[in-house]
Each structure stands twice: as C-alpha cells, then as structure tokens.
Length: 260
Ligand SMILES: Nc1ncnc2c1ncn2[C@@H]1O[C@H](COP(=O)(O)OP(=O)(O)OP(=O)(O)O)[C@@H](O)[C@H]1O
Image (tube, rainbow, N blue to C red; front, top):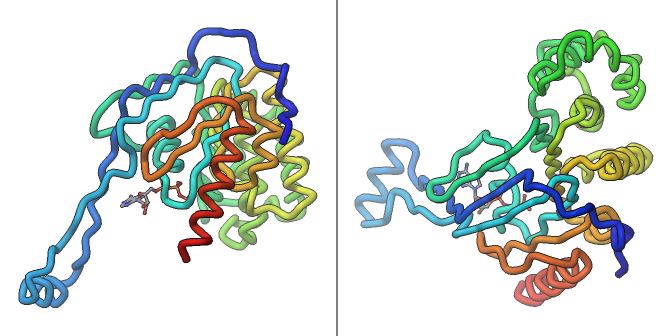
C-alpha cells in the first residue's frame, strides 16, 4: 500500500497534542441488582473487576499532522481520543492540547434530540467554539454539506442515524478546529456522503489542521494520513509509517479470525 500523504509530511512544527504516559482503568460491574449481588456473593464470585483500557501510552502529534489510530475492537482507540478531547481524564499520566479541539467521537454526539436541525447548528456550533456571527456566515455551507435542507426545521430525534451523522460531521468539520478528532463516523454514512467527508478531511489536512482519525478502513487511512499509530490491548505497539501500521493491523485481524 502506498500513502497519498507520503512526501507531503508537514514541516516539523510545535506539538499540538502531547499524551504522556497515560493509563486508564475501567471497572466492570457484574452485578447491578440486589438479587445479582446476593447470587454472586453466595457463589463467591467477584462483584466487579477492573482492567486497563490504556496502559502507559505516550504520543506526540505535531501541528499539521494527520495521524491514524489503528487497532482491533477494544484496543483503546476511542478511550485515547476521549482523553485527548477532555471528556475523560487519565488515571495516570497527562494530556496536553494546544488549540481548539473539535471532536466527532460519537454519531450525533452533541446534537440535542428535541431541537431542530437549524437550532442544533447554532447550539452545537457554539459548543464547538464558534461565535454567532461565524455560525451565521457558515450556516448555508454547513447545511448544504449535510444535505438535510428539507429537514432543517424538523427535530433531530426524527432524523435517521445517517442524517444525524451528516449534520454532526458537517457542523464539526466547518468549525475550523485546530485539532480535529474523528472516531468511526465515516463508517455510518452512505457512500456519496462518505466521499464528501473524505474530501473535506483532505482539505482540512492540506490547510494544515491537526487530525487524529480512528477507522477500520485501513486503505482509506493510508491514503489520508501522514502517520499511523497501532494499539493492541491498550498498549501502543507501533508508531510510524502509516502503511506499515496498516500491515500490522491486517496481521492482527488475520490472527483474530484464525483464533475464532
Ligand atoms: N466507560 C467504560 N466503562 C467500562 N469499560 C469501558 C468503557 N469505555 C470503554 N471500555 C472498555 O475499554 C476497552 C477499550 O475500549 P475502546 O472503546 O477505547 O476501544 P476501541 O479500540 O475504540 O474499540 P472499537 O474499535 O470497538 O470502537 C474495551 O474493552 C471497552 O469495553
């Protein structure tokens, strides 16, 4: 696989994101009701267990770099993006971010179901750091990109998941973030919209925005990204050439299929 971004690496600049020795532990509760607790205690089974979703992960992203985060399901990619976006804090280590961050971490995250598409453009735009004048100036572009014009005055709870995602992506992608975090959303849209998103990501990349992208579409990541980081069971196992990271992902995937 050859990378489109090869030879187009951004000039070495100041760091935009510094993740330093980060670990994150989650507790999984096995019993929620009094009955569950009683049964598990009688059987001498644990009521909960904890495990490390991220283990001593360090990562520096230079301003203007587009970095692919790869790894099988459950390897810790989304957790890492949540730590960078600030919606979650690490148990150990630190995360420093320089600039305005726009995260697209969940389909429709940040859209309010009871509000219309139009109201959500204003609300979500403001949450993502745009002023009212800026939103008004970009309103038509955002709506046109999303393709939800006809449903603009409908509450978004009536939108399909694809429409939800299109509006959410469109708002976030037009906030001119310094750092743009994209998690899996590209898997949800229909193919023409996906192509549009990829074009927009490429534009943002060529404008010199910093991006971290999580996806399972490895050829797309290889095309779009300057660099690839591979996670395995919460550990960073590779950080370097995006095509090589892609090959590691393919090998893990093959091993996982073989193990089933
Ligand atoms: N809030 C939470 N509470 C408990 N466990 C969690 C929580 N969030 C994530 N996990 C667990 O942490 C591990 C890492 O999850 P994460 O979503 O970061 O992986 P991922 O690499 O993004 O996976 P996928 O590709 O499936 O989205 C998983 O085992 C997941 O079940």
